[in-house]
Image (cartoon, rainbow, N blue to C red; front, side):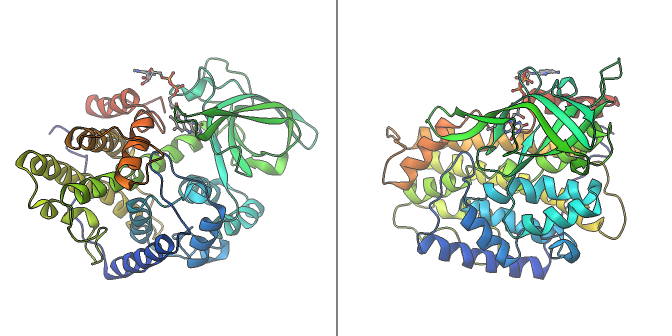
Length: 416
Ligand SMILES: Cc1cc2nc3c(=O)[nH]c(=O)nc-3n(C[C@H](O)[C@H](O)[C@H](O)COP(=O)(O)OP(=O)(O)OC[C@H]3O[C@@H](n4cnc5c(N)ncnc54)[C@H](O)[C@@H]3O)c2cc1C
């Protein structure tokens, strides 16, 4: 059967995850009401103080062992935290990468000393990490990275250039994918991951600004930067395998279909002026109620919102199915390889995010301004400015579709 082993089973969240959802919602409502956070859409905001407050609640490193500052809760509880943060576009960038990628990689490949040094600090929201993978000419085809690390006494000397490095100007460290032995035909061997201190001598970080002028990502230049031996992550030469495992985690979460969700909420609020305030406060996921909130608006708008709500429902179940697989693998079982499922979520999810922006643009007649006092108008402007990013970051549409097609055709995948 076509896609016979691609599985998005139907699932229900357990009571503890529902209870956690209520707690996170109450916390976020309080943050918003107190003016401590002001959401912006398009690219998560970096706010160390907010990350500390989230860490203090125990909502970073939710699934990690307590020995390393984690909370030994399930992947489903982590899923719920992520979903609620995205529902109000909370400023999570200071802990997002550490929580989703760096932490799990450290748990899997890190030395005992690395785990003890970094994981508790990440879980407290005090150790922001960035990801140093892409380079000029090496994005989709990561195996072609040219940043080189040369062995010297006590460590490595690293030289090269990274690009599109989100929050490198605000983070403390990044995982740097580099070549530790020459490419002699076998492109995927000879790569390693080093943990680089972004304030070390020889590191220069320069901004690349968004169309709006906002500063989120950077170029990072590494000029003979010394990295001690104890900052090698995992095995020297095994960087490719380590990075591709990280990417499966990067692609399947709610952040791949919910980054414009607050605009959808504001759109409905605008179309149904006078309706009850959103987001909803009961235990059901906010998405499910959207369609029923559209009574009183014109037929065309209702159809558009209805379709978007149905897609959100489907995407959420796909993403949740992957979280369930991770949740059931905590008892020592290795999770199935879910690279294809994750690619499907990201591909469908990022187009869904775009379609929300398009729907808002077409259904409401106005010239959106990013400095508007009106939330809908501001969100719409922010989403339009950053519209291209979703289908590029974390793997482009074409690359994801290649991964899915390879599964369909039964061939192995070799790109990111
Ligand atoms: C907002 C944002 C944040 C980012 N943050 C980070 C970060 O923190 N750290 C980091 O390392 N990187 C980051 N990136 C970089 C991102 O991962 C890369 O942009 C992405 O992997 C694509 O690489 P590229 O830009 O080099 O494009 P290329 O790989 O050069 O691709 C250019 C075009 O060619 C297509 N293409 C490439 N290969 C194939 C193929 N085999 N078959 C068909 N089509 C193909 C692509 O789909 C694309 O349309 C970020 C990017 C964005 C937009």
